[in-house]
Image 1: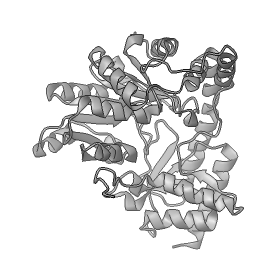
Image 2: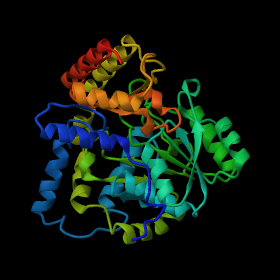
Image 3: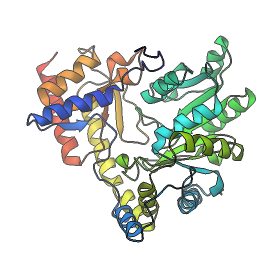
Image 4: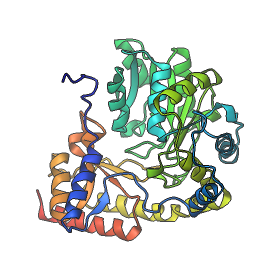
Length: 388
């Protein structure tokens, strides 16, 4: 059987680390998980209660519109009014099977095969790998601490010397760095994209998880773009696979057609649960997790600095610490494997996020309980004391 070139995507290394960690757990090891961005808390009680109530009424047994239930779309629109003070038309909200489905549909709706899509490196690997699978070219924008690991119009100008940029994808807060784009920085990117006919997609799935200034939504600046969000992070609903997009009106029908053909619809039970997550009780429970994230952030960043890690990203939001290895260590993949095999701490090598420079960086997710995170840092310190 002939295999397609498009199907030969690079691995998602964080998930490979998770697989090896799970194998070790099957042998009786107690592994501390810092490899994946999965909150330890689980869905809010209000989400589970909403699902149970909907099931009791017999409301979650069938297909929904490819765009999602109107009740959930209206609730998501209301979230923007509460959180950002903006009016969002529920008709422009598209409920998706997680943010992953949102990106697939957005890429298909906006771009032709061979189009060039700019991405910041370091960045979430599934962006790059999904673009490759769809026959699109991922254009690497090499960012660093000087720009808080975020792209600028200057990055875009340099990338355009090799040809037109058909799209730009930015994330704020970003994975793996946790850095955010403030309003002026977002405004500059929006203006640059508009001036050069570059479609803009903004990943906002870590909104709600910030440690100082609030996260600015791109929708506060323009509605001529796509915003992607999810219930996986702030609402801790990873396995429910439920997300959404806010899109220009002209894209609603094309996205509905894509959803109907690719996915039929997002899971009806997950939509019912998501509606409960957006209730006042669900919001309160989600916000209650922030105390643990804040404590974990302080512990991890302080530990990395003390242990000799360098260029630690500011971590304005999300729940990741991204840093360069101590000077005596020079191979993030080997570092990750040894940390897991000998000390049973799972963490992700930077090659997942930056295929050029990531051999010297690591990402640590601190989405677990504070006791787990503190113990993981102790085990990390023990490995470093033993040396390479």
